Image 1 (tube, rainbow, N blue to C red):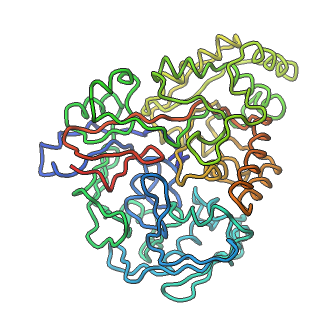
Image 2 (tube, rainbow, N blue to C red):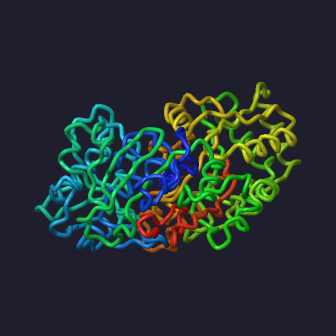
Image 3 (tube, one colour):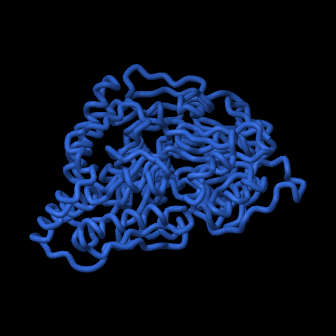
Length: 532
């Protein structure tokens, strides 16, 4: 999904952004029946097509309903869609359910979807999730600089409840993707002032927007008119923004926070005994990588490939996972996540993910023969996301293996690091993660490694990989698609597109005031079904 919103997922990111204050006890006010959950300040206003990080995404997904929604296991179900018809996975006729309303009382129509998708795709609007619409015919024309046309030719409104979608080529993922945030509808009111709309969004989902106290909290209330398959089973959600996971965990133990989706490093070895049956552990579709943009000195071209491979083989992943996370992570073996269908832990070249100090030194020396290394290798991370310990461990592993000055470089907030990465001004290596938005390998790969993706953090550009991604999406069967994905990832390993470090086994918890709280397939809580 977004960067961790990493979903994604960045992606997809697993990082919690957090600038705010600690939570107040939920018993201190009339709000004691509202579910309080950890969060952070979203990077941008809450517009679905411009939300590509975890903290905004978890809110947006509660406020809006798409053609489909994903249950806790990642299975897609029709939501606003009544029928999605296609004979060839290229031409679609979509019929929406009647009498579905936005929270301002206006009706959700076919035009609500078409207008939202066209807005998201248009280059003039510079939406971070614009790449999502790339399979649709006419995307190339509206996404070019100074586009002469403003709407995609592949979208046509037939009547109030029907529209058609024409793709450039058949897609094995398109229908599965229709529950993803960029495919949500928007009311007419949004287009009058999109930035203002994002501050007070009007949705059609299981919750309605309440208030947003920046850097402190976001409140949502159940939408009594929501007719879909994921109605709120609680009396509201409060997303509370914390300065640290340690503070959040203390509040969870004290009963001042109802759910926490990330246990701090300091409690990893004790949280199961601390919380008992309220402790939650689950393998999830999330990852953490080290990226570096190719404009950074020594990291372009062949020299950059050699240095990225050397650094990868200088990282003792199993030791870091054991010492920092008490075994609750899985060493990366590809660029996606180990829980996804079709995952292959033995791709050609995957030995580059193994700790191999001797080979790491040889590769570093080969890079030095191209251009001698100078300076400091910095890995930038956000201080508010609980990443200090593992980033420092990675830096030390690289330093001890390669004999270079490798250090962890903190930035205050998730928003700070995402802004610098997006602006391509970060100038150092950086940690980033992806949290899946829908459970396919191509969701992870297309979002982060298509050459034209706005969420391609590392400027990766290989036309053959783009071609294989296209072919994987157009494949006639999942088995054929997985073979093409494996070919693409083998090339990405040769290029060392970035440095995957680990996949997640989520550690979370609920307070004693909550009777039910479960994690979904991508590590977020099943918010609608939290019961208190």
